[in-house]
Image 1 (cartoon, rainbow, N blue to C red):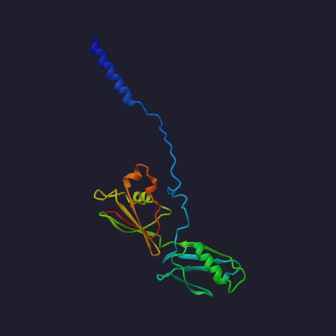
Image 2: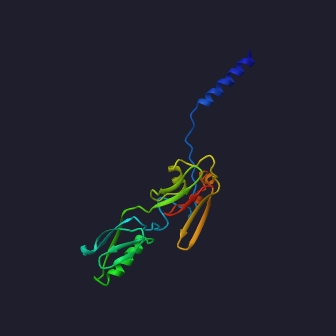
Length: 201
């Protein structure tokens, strides 16, 4: 009789323990300074590309101001300057270039550049399940992009994702372990740049 009572008590305690709610668990840790932060890109890395629409404002010079669409050859046409190669430049580089060019026509030109339309900000994705150009949505990391695309397929090699980046005549290839990123290795969750090739073997 006593044995049965002990067994019933033990079962009651097990059931009570399994139904109990868990306390809030908090864990904090610091990441190294070289870990990319999507909210704060390390530098201005957006490069003007074909199809982008650029707004140019030259202070107190309305005849020199306006919008221009970048042609497929990377050029725009501007008053007084005519043809100007802009593809591959950042907005700050273009601003400095225009201020230098317009010095021939006006005193101390002050130029403001804004991107009014983005058509060139895309990466190229290749995997077993899908392939094609994918537009970037802001400053995205590889984890954010893959999550937006629905994740990886069952046949994709999660540990050897290749990100190939070209900067002028230099090619850089990153080998990324998706599972390591999921476990918290944020150094591998690199910020993507327009023109990157993501290859999932």
